[in-house]
Length: 308
Image (cartoon, rainbow, N blue to C red; front, top):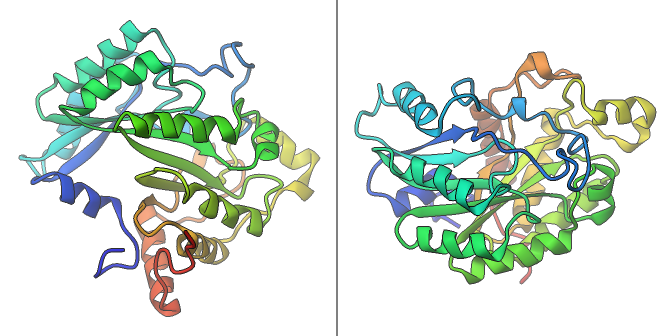
């Protein structure tokens, strides 16, 4: 835990690595997923509409370089000397031929001002030959592989049509760590069928893994997804958290989390026109301010209840 803050945040983490300001720029490189293209299934995860996660400047008809240029133009007006991390975000960014993947990553790294990569992917889409190539990249540039594990419960993963098990996530994270590559994990809090106790158990389980960063994301119900249909057919499976309740859930989660993990995010914000159930009407920074206020009220901190 940072001596001045109740949890380790991503901004401080980047400052500990880089001697200059760094900004992530989201890239949509035009990839798909194995449970969308028929390899494992069709339709993707039941909650998925990747349109909710990608900024307007990230569109897959644009090249990686063009997206970076537009992103840099968007951010550089305030900090002209800022450097950038290319964040391959949309869908599964390790799901293609090795040649095509490395071409996209290299295009990003060759862009002026780019100092590293964050690659979002699934734990069942990381072959050893790609890990070997990524190990080489990590020796020269900042590299973080962000694995969407979403839940540590296999029944939940099956219900949401995730297409992989938690055991696969554990094995892939360990293989990545063994290559000296930083790992992040992404979890959705509030998935159908998961009680508060089950959600908190995720913190305990992932705290045993060689992980650097953790992203939390409240469940958001997006129009035209299978999960909205599930909600109508089986509302008893869902508990839709209100902001104050979710704030306490995040803090309870944080208390059980390994104190060395970097807590990158508590929530995500999808465009309101895509939401099937109204959102909370809070910007991410507003929500984080409420979390920090509640942490202070509770006089607590990350790892308070962590047990090694």
